[in-house]
Image 1 (cartoon, one colour):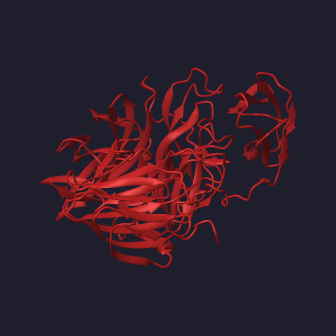
Image 2: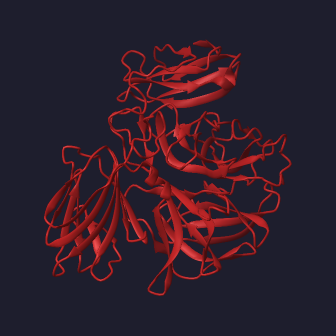
Image 3: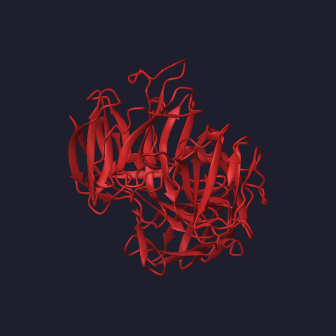
Length: 520
């Protein structure tokens, strides 16, 4: 098939039960893009609209492997059969991409007065694959606007995870106007496409000189050459003490490495180390406690080390600890360049709950603010929802009653503050939206999944203080001030729209319905 690219979007028919096809686009004899697609032109479930603007004015030939009859159209205006952001399972108070698959948050950065968030994205399907970087911005960490795709696959590979930083001092020399260069460090995942067949994984750089509207790949990529491990997920951070930048990447198994740089273009290996029981998507950032700066290293499963970072060497001060105890928080990352006047370290994680029968798949959990606390004389990491979540609180319903009782829930999403005081050290059961859990007073834990899963509650004087954030696809639970939290898959059953308690206890509850962030 011959396509004259005169309009912006390629209209691609998708069928959820189709066999996977491989679309290949050629300019002359050169392969310029290829992707795995559940293509079905005769009985599609829906259409995906793929941005072809980088090819406008060109003539491309298209092949499908295996060969099937197909016909593709171009359009300037996507037309969806269902109104976007009003779908049955669209979360009301959490970010999700307009269409397509979403996973790891990437390139979280505060830049020119806005929070910029990039993420792994398949714009041609609702399953993992064809990795691009999508791009969204927010004024308040709650309401998000999705922008144009930022990074597209190339000859080096598909676009795996990474991070961002603002080059305020123009150390790279990329600056062209009033905008400070915005730098994206990412993994080019070789051998994940026909274009990158037999290529290794490398760490690369892209940058924007127009305020984050468009991005160019660095012409001397990669900035870190292949090591042979499928190493990936670079996180860049600045150290004021050492006056240099550190970049941490995942190597293999439980191993990570730290590099240093003074020019953001050339990197020197400083250290390799192990973070037990975790892998992938490292984060590295400083946090202050009692006037002292500590450094935190974490992995994709939210296990973390607290220590010091000097001259390129991270030294843990205590054994690794666990922050998250649920089943749907992964690849958490923190924002770079948040103003000192704000003083927060803000983190977002991926909720991998599968969204049924939708044109989008995957969401992010509530952004949380991180701090250091103390537990049994040891430092611990705490995560608690950002204060901006309160901006979408609706009118509160407050209760101070003895269990058992029911409190009605309104809307798609809620923010619930609980103080549970069991009588005579009895267990207390709670349920909402099809989710059931037990406060086990003897163990000081919250248990769910019929006791197979649990998290510590850090009860004080026998009282459990819990915060619960609900939405269409998950329950988020925060213990006390966030010393532990759990994001748990739960496709909400809105026929069970009560917060229910059983057992003998005094319950104080403040229940806030949350406004739908997609409704104007």
